[in-house]
Image 1 (spheres, rainbow, N blue to C red):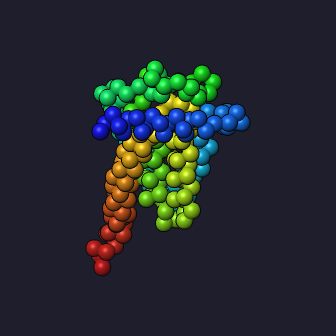
Image 2: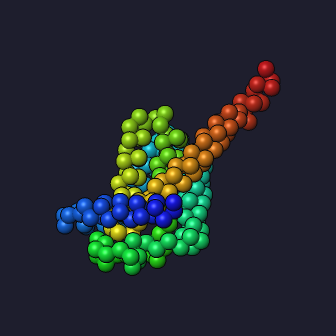
Image 3: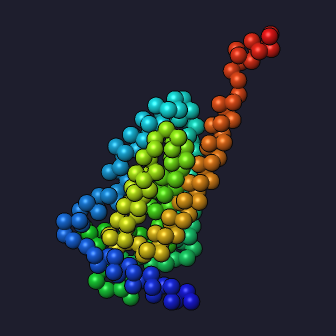
Length: 200
């Protein structure tokens, strides 16, 4: 059964990776780079500060812990399962790569997919009350970045789907935890107001 699923995964990869065009190579290469998305991260940070003020510091703390957990968990699976990336798999031929980029040796599962979907789901849960179009934008961004990993030949679809699932679960877990925490600190009365209430 596992061998059957692996063969399907490889066949689907060869189909998707084979759907490439010369004019897409460089855009996909840069889409996969974290540094390219710094303007987006700064925009999201500004949106957070605009609505949450100083509480943004707590939100950022949740994000840092979540991404750390997501990234390290993916690394544990990579070193534990040791499934070769398509770019390193000798059983595959004609894998399309860009700029000679091959990634690390092992690829199950994708930390890119896990991290981006975790962040997307987390921010949607925290900010959807204020920004109605955030859901399709963030999910679209996460899907595009994840697909670029298949296009570049460094992940099988199974790597991406597993990473997406892990990221979504972590995004929900940390997103709801953050919302609960923000609600708790918002419900704590300020000292001055508490003193006035006690006097009355």
